[in-house]
Length: 152
Ligand SMILES: Nc1ncnc2c1ncn2[C@@H]1O[C@H](COP(=O)(O)OP(=O)(O)O)[C@@H](O)[C@H]1O
Ligand SMILES: [Mg+2]
Image (cartoon, rainbow, N blue to C red; front, top):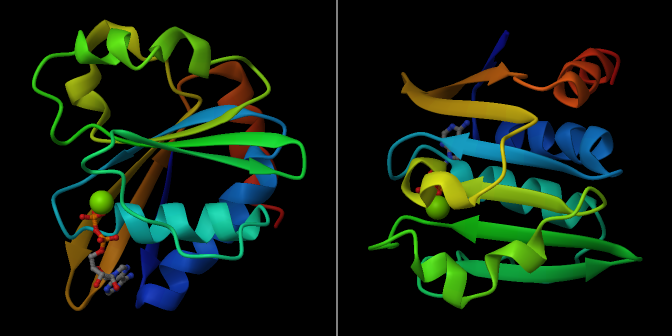
């Protein structure tokens, strides 16, 4: 486990950039924290660092926003509005996950059993004017990523 303090939005984006470097071969990142904690900001940091130059929309209504970035497939999920995990079946959830893709999942608790297990779990919380970020690595691949992250 690793805890960081992020003083402002720029530091959240910078953590996203570091996470992008360790996720670039594929992996599943869960993003936890209340509304306004900074999950979408962090996702933007990752997605833009992986090569996306436009805006990163919050997929609150679409559930998922796909990106194809120089051969890498990236899926950004926001499951906040998911009423029933079965809705994920209708969007073809099973096709999204293969080991080469990067999956960033906001509100993973709402996904039930249909979403894959995480490599990394990041929890954001308000701390003064900034945020605290706690990073855990429940998988073997995640442990490796966490080790690499400290070197970046
Ligand atoms: N480390 C930080 N310190 C202060 N504000 C931040 C930080 N990171 C992000 N924010 C701000 O928090 C607000 C909400 O962020 P957002 O990413 O939309 O949250 P969420 O997706 O968790 O609901 C944004 O205005 C963003 O600029
Ligand atoms: Mg969000």
